[in-house]
Length: 70
Image 1 (cartoon, one colour):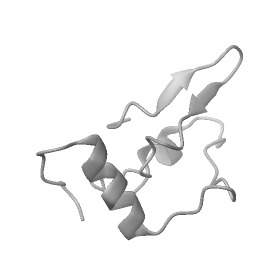
Image 2: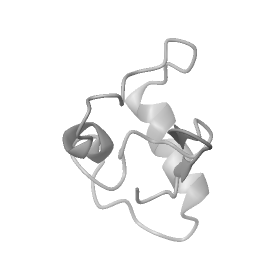
Image 3: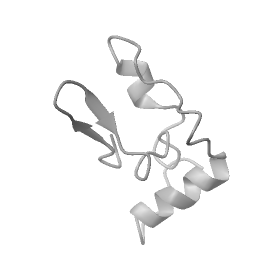
Image 4: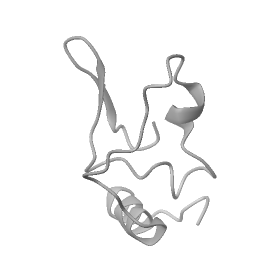
């Protein structure tokens, strides 16, 4: 994860919604969704964000950097 949003929990991996940008700013698509071997990376209906919101979050996580993908 380019934002270090994924961490290992007690029994499962956990995605931190405050750090996850769905790879906006870094890649064309969500890499965790593409590589997860058990298809468990699913959208959280409690954390729906627009592409613009995700890009602003990316900019906050990577100050001074230019997004590779907008």
